[in-house]
Length: 159
Image (cartoon, rainbow, N blue to C red):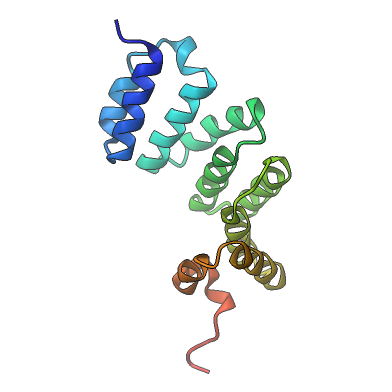
């Protein structure tokens, strides 16, 4: 008999290969109680992200942020799913709460918050956050140069 941990490891391997269907098949071997555990919720969250299941992601991310608010990934995923559903204000609000709870936020937190602020028209705050992300990791400049969420921060090519 294969352990729940091993099924989760197999599912993670399939996720790394971009094989969501196979990952879900591995998760199907777990009991309801096992699926509700934090490690299984985290794997389920990654499958939902891979599938772009925007409705499912908040349902998985919320309990993860409650169980361990210092972990970044569920906050990022939850906010991103909201943004993809055009709920930008909610995305910003979720990630703002997360940014105060995450033990060591990566530059991605500032970058995503900059995107949300930019989409909401708060360009000074978007620029401040973007600069913070660039200071911490200059490679984000490449993404920012073509990110449509940050278009309002770029000069208008028409003059």
